[in-house]
Image (cartoon, rainbow, N blue to C red; front, side, top):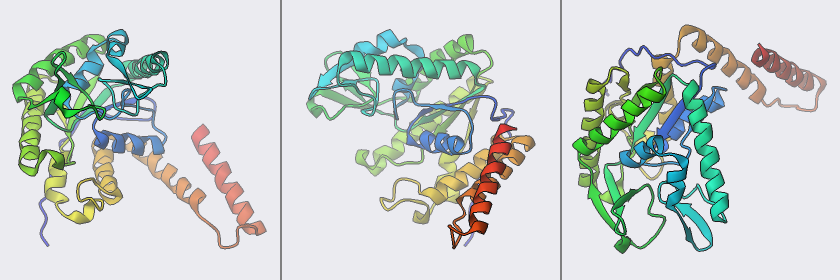
Amino acid sequence: MKTTSVTFPNYSIEINRTVPVAFLGSCFSEHLSRKLNENKFSVVSNPLGVIFNPMSLAYILELESEKLIANNFERNNVWLNWSANATIFGYSNEALEKVIRDNLALFQDRLSASNVLFVTFGSAWVYEHLSNSAIVANCHKQPSRDFNKRLLSSDEIVGQWTKTIRQLNKNYPALNIVFTVSPVRHIKDGVVDNTRSKSILLEAVHQLTEKFSQVEYFPVYEFFMDELRDYAYYKKDGIHPNEIAIDLVWEKFEHAFFGNETKAWLHEFQRLTQQLEHRPLHPDSVEAKEFVAKAQREMETFLAG
């Protein structure tokens, strides 16, 4: 069967193990950050958990922790935050405040040492809390009558992110930004409205790449829509990418952002990892124990070097 190939750009940004890599956004950014973590890169990701809409992601970068913790509230004896995912919580307001402050401090510290921030937009649909018209990152299972659901415009996203990128340029002059649009379809919005949402995100991202020289686009969305347009690359729900698809994206990512030295290091690390993961047929034999001990020494020596 003939397939449509997606050409990935040549990037001037180079990722290596000595410089932290920062991620923000939907669960797709989590997949990439997990792969980097598994391969011993320095990674910081989503200080307030997985978030899908562009406005809430921008607020994380713009607002100080004291302003963010003002969005804390209690639900069923658990403290949550309107600007965070439900995985960010505390059993007291003070506990949640500490989590948010600590997570943001770590993220900002790593960001200051990084040369690239990957931002993944998931949906242009947002929910505004009727009490103050503020966009929330998560509705936290509160009644739908408390929110107004609406679709962002590309102009709104570009306007907010223009402000955010200028602030990032000021605070982190060496930082590059790479946008991606998540290929995960938000079926709960309906197929047509999901397509409208993705179209708005794509238009906004491309306007930002044209506006700022240090902003790039990584065409993961197009890769899935064209090269991987087969349910063999999705989990049983037919929506989320499976491990085969994630590995294929990782190959594109590696080719796009790793230099030859990093690729060589990664190849050797993966060889040693496979060696360690090997399960001998007779694990208690002298030969098997010597093999395991030798493999462990080789890995320790390699990582120490």
